[in-house]
Length: 354
Image (cartoon, rainbow, N blue to C red; front, side):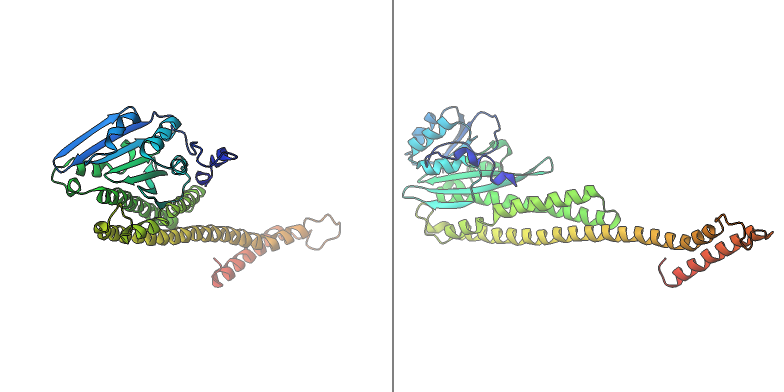
């Protein structure tokens, strides 16, 4: 769970608003991608400097600036200066341990979300920060657009017949959040497949590796729950139509996203219960297996206790012991031991201990 605390100590003793990256270092160069559009106009390009974005501050077009990478502190200082974003908000953008939230200001709103996807069978939680202004949205990602969930959204914007080309900042904000929420269902489908595979495996064999995999899945569900649960509060704020920049005409779309969010949360809680059940099943299976082993060893030991007693008695080195000179003593002793063992086996079977 270090993903939620790692690097926070870097900020110790610094004044509020100090810009410092808190999170995993990718080593990648910061990328800036711009989509500028309206009903009959479209422009898409990559730029190398935040200075090239200044001309999009006061246009009639709808502009989406996507910045990938959080390690270029100088760039983020310029973003705050050029677009009038408070230094505390810029600090939150660079801190990837933020809880999903929404904050409303006079000229913009600030939203933090968690984008989740699988990479090599490992759950990856990436923070996405969104600043919504009039006719302008700036998104900030940890890694890059090649691995995000906005590919379909970009294709919709490129389509001249798409509804999004005729709408403003409110609808684009909805579309961004909806893309992230819809991807949660993709994650849940993969989690469900894993749970079904684990259930089948537990019916046949319960190994330590299987237990480790189930436990890792449980940790991943905790990550997912922490990322999704606060989202309900964010969507609820937006669907009430009280955020001036978003507008009330988009509230019906946020109601739909809210329903999806509640469904995701319910499914996560269901899966958490199922995974807890899998762990209980594994522990019960391991306990039953150990009981069977102990049962076998106990029966085996019980059979040999009287046999050990007999051979122990006749193994004593006294000179005057009865039956020592008996000609058929060895054969008789074998008959007694075999008969005793057979009787005990029949008794155990009758009691259904075998």
